[in-house]
Image (cartoon, rainbow, N blue to C red; front, side, top):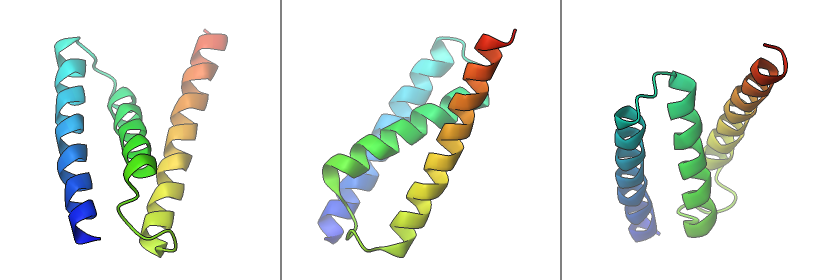
Amino acid sequence: MPGRLYSFIVLYTGLVAASNTWLLLLGEKRADAYLAVNTLIYFTLYSTMRPMPPGSRRARALTLLLLAVFTTIVAYRVYRVLNP
């Protein structure tokens, strides 16, 4: 299990650094865009690698928190598009 967690952390760090660099180079200034992309990277990697046991309370709490934040960001962006 520690090997999977280590691989998850290294891969997540690399993908986040790459995506944040691209967003910065593209001129993105909104913090919610960075947070949404980082959350998507986390969910994608977590669902494919499963670095922690399924019953882990920490992993479940982090997942629920990130899902709530991501849902809020998406809802806000949809609201801004529909109600200019």
